[in-house]
Image 1 (cartoon, helix red, strand yellow):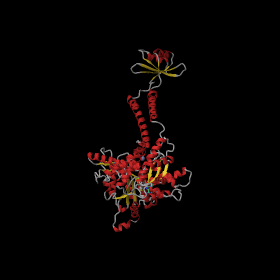
Image 2 (cartoon, helix red, strand yellow):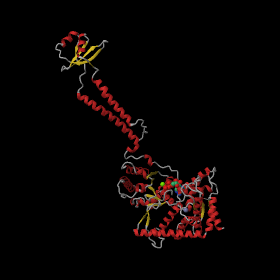
Image 3 (cartoon, protein in one colour):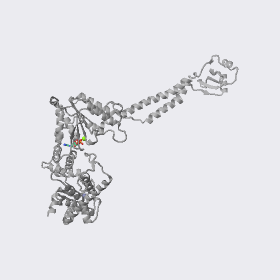
Image 4 (cartoon, protein in one colour):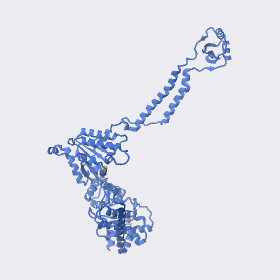
Amino acid sequence: MAEPKKPTKKPLVFYYLVTLAILFIINAVVLPMFFSKSITEVDYSVFLQAVEENRVTQVELSGDHEEIVYVATDQNGQPQTYITVAMPDPNLLERLRASSPDIKFSRIRPRQASPLLTYLFSLFVPILLILGLGRLFSKQLQQRMGNTMSFGKSDARVYVEAQTGKTFADVAGQEEAKEALMEIVDFLHHPEKYASIGAKLPKGALLVGPPGTGKTLLAQAVAGEADVPFFSISGSEFVEMFVGMGAAKVRDLFKEADKKAPCIVFIDEIDTVGKKRGDGGFSGNDEREQTLNQLLTEMDGFDSRKGVVILAATNRPESLDPALLRPGRFDRRIPVELPDINGRTAILKVHAAKIAMERDVDFEAIARATAGTSGADLANIINEAALRAVRMGRNRVRQEDLQESVEVVIAGYERKNATISPKEKEVIAYHEIGHALVAAKQTNSAPVTKITIIPRTSGALGYTMQVEEGERHLMSKEDAMNRIATLTGGRAAEELIFNMATTGAANDIEQATKLARAMVTRYGMSDQFGMVAFETLANPYLGGDSAMNCSSETSAQIDKEVIKLVKQGHEKAINILKDNLDKLHELSRELLKKETLTGQEFMAILES
Ligand code: ADP
Ligand code: MG
Ligand code: ZN
């Protein structure tokens, strides 16, 4: 609704009470006053006396001779109206006429209003009042609900051209995605080039990839580069409060786009509307289904030669309705994957460009330490580093700020004033050195770069950082076994030195088990089962659940195999630590003293 809504000052009860009061006054005061003047009831003798004293000026005898209404002057000489019962008094009339020659015999009380009229009056006045108030309330209600009452009419605001101000220069890495999108931009600039050769461009392109990899950013960059109108809407905006609204929005959007062609329509988070139809038991999703159907219809309906290109983004491509993905709709899929080391370096540089940095900052070292992070994480790391520099009272960001913020993003902030008893500190130190030692003594393990026993807000009481020297794309079975051994190294040290097990290893155990399970069910790395997949990932980009598909007997055997693998790793870790017991003690003592050891310090002691 266009007009700004007025704040409602009075609660509903107030209006209700006012209505009641008005009705009460009408019933008790106004109506009787309207129908009769105030009349005093008196004794018959009072009447006789007034007649004798010649004070009566007007008399009304009711037809049935039951009462007499008369006007007489009172002590002050003012005329007053009285009523009294009629007595059998045959020559009353003569006496009255005798008492005063100009006495009037006429109606004093107004004629009783027609009973029908009275009835209608008392019936309709309240109804009218209530109707009036009802109108008032419903108007307020509409204002409060905002524009939801304007059925079928979408907010024009949603479809205005986006002024993103972003270009491809803002998107680091993702070269393949940029290339594919560049082609679309080029088509919108020079459609004749494509038309002359007879090539048809895809109607729609779907950006798929894990969260935070720059899908939305890429679409915004396309808008900046394209120099054509760019309509942007998020999938969730289609799913409306009222049935049919979503479909109407889709219709409006495409009508608008058709008018503005050539142009780009971007639907972010398309999985909110584009989910497979007909799944899920309850059919509470008619609305979504209708919206999707409308979207499919519209995509078929327009001619891509006119130059309407539809971009969409999602991190759940597996949940999309197949009808959306068939040729002629979103027939081109542009993967936007997690960045590799070069991509990470480039992203760090793009974001660092907006920040005052020391000149000798080594972005590659940071990129190496952040394998598996998304562009959004990296942007966050740069910002955290800048915040830390300010906290430290510096005006430029240093390498150490970046390194610390990597750890903040991975493990949370340092808990400086957490109190941990000396005994527990000792256990934690041995635990961490256990990890580091096992990692260092295995060939092919990533080098240890940092060991710390300063607790973090994530709950970690200490941790050991390992950073690969180059980018790894494959993990061999040996690597996986080494990793399991390294993960169990912490607990192995606790057992070896203190002969006890603590809860500190919970996270290690979880990770080791997960890896061992994946080795058996997905990587074909177990001797017993060989190359059989028992598990499929349900949503590869969100790293979520996986679905088991095997018989219960196999499932039990898989469990046994997983246990075997973890046990193997654990034994290996114990053996490594036993062989290096003096180093374990020496390093742990050093770590207890310093709380943090760098990779070099660690290796120096290990190799001394
Ligand atoms: P998605 O839509 O894929 O979930 P976004 O596009 O919203 O991710 O990215 C979130 C933020 O992460 C961006 O605003 C940007 O700051 C940063 N980012 C992600 N990928 C990149 C990239 N390739 N280059 C530069 N910045 C990036
Ligand atoms: Mg996004
Ligand atoms: Zn551990």
